[in-house]
Image 1 (cartoon, rainbow, N blue to C red):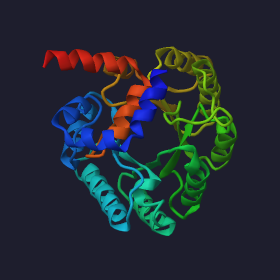
Image 2 (cartoon, rainbow, N blue to C red):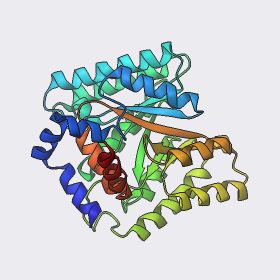
Image 3 (cartoon, helix red, strand yellow):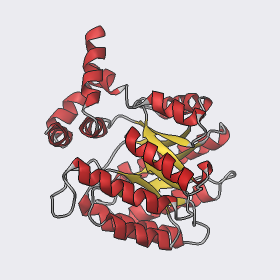
Image 4 (cartoon, one colour):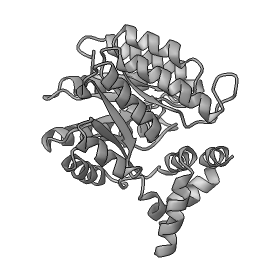
Length: 308
């Protein structure tokens, strides 16, 4: 019930505008968002790297309404890739196609993202662009574009996709991506989807996640297992040990500000772990979806608010 409530709130434009303009809203978001500027994200990335964790940086935003916004978003990612290289940070980038203008001009979005992947592929050391998954109206278009990008000369291995285990189509989509050895981030999913296309029960989503996780771990392609569920993480570790899968054959991925204790424990035990670090002014939808994924975060925020 709480999950459905927070997903609904994430789509409320009036609340979003009020929250993103308010000082208290920005203060509450600080647990999960690095800040509003590139320098904020870089500062946090360096700190996380020093703790032995790698990073994926995401400039928050989606569904831009004009070409100028899309170009500005792409330029910011170019700046981020340059800074990652010059500062020798262990980080890549994640982006949403609607933030690159997919709803405005599909050709523009394709050109902008193609330019970013080409830049990442040509860097030394080579970098990587993760194309995030959005709601179901964008699923097929996103996957088609990732396949297209990956087939372009020099791009193989420099671009990856995201698969959500609550989607009933997930296993078939994974089969298609693995056929071309495309890197995948596996997550559970944080959008409100109808029962006919997505599992609704947590047990079904978890069961799907574990089944898909094992397929990825045995694929011989480097993937990211994005979860804070310690039981599932323990299953992944046990499966890797049983199947003689090296620690460096995949990575765990977690969100900035969530289960920092577990992140540190995994690194100390020799498991590769990446932290997803978002930044930017458009933080409200992301913030509410994090509360939907883990209602315990509501209690954490409440305790900290009362202390201030």
